[in-house]
Length: 172
Image (cartoon, rainbow, N blue to C red; front, side):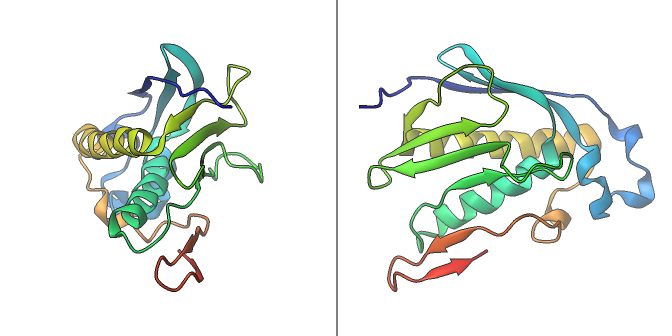
């Protein structure tokens, strides 16, 4: 039996600034990896994952995953964040639904703690929705850019989803 973790917190601090992005590249996908920062995932007050990551790249993965959930057309898919910054075939951060999508396990290949916490699915989706919304605002304000030109234009790995009505797999 997996015990449910009670608190999930995301803390980030940008490690680059607007001067790191030339004005002529503000809408160019090449800048996605330049928007970076120290990202800390805390579980019940303990740092579970902490590293410098491409925050705009992470945002794009998160935005796509949450858009699929918010559409209501598909079963909640697994979330996997792969980064172009490392040559790993494993995702850096994952969320794996289980127990009829009632629960989700958080995993990371670079975790700092020897456990993979479990959360109620609605809780983790709400926390990640809050993170997505705040991260968008902070990226746009800190770098004086819009994240919209990068959605569906930056190459991120495909995500398999199951259509609720037809039960068929589709790739996004």
